[in-house]
Length: 54
Image (tube, rainbow, N blue to C red):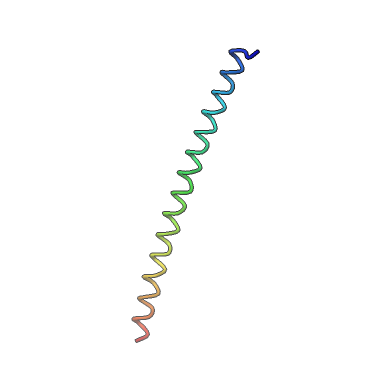
């Protein structure tokens, strides 16, 4: 026999898990953008260095 408190607790845990998943997804997205930006800068730096050698 389930109690209302149990149902509320399960719902709350589900909500917290969903929030945690969303936060982790946002964190990964920010990190991916940061690494893409660093890679772009590195590419430009390498191109400048290559042009300077010629």
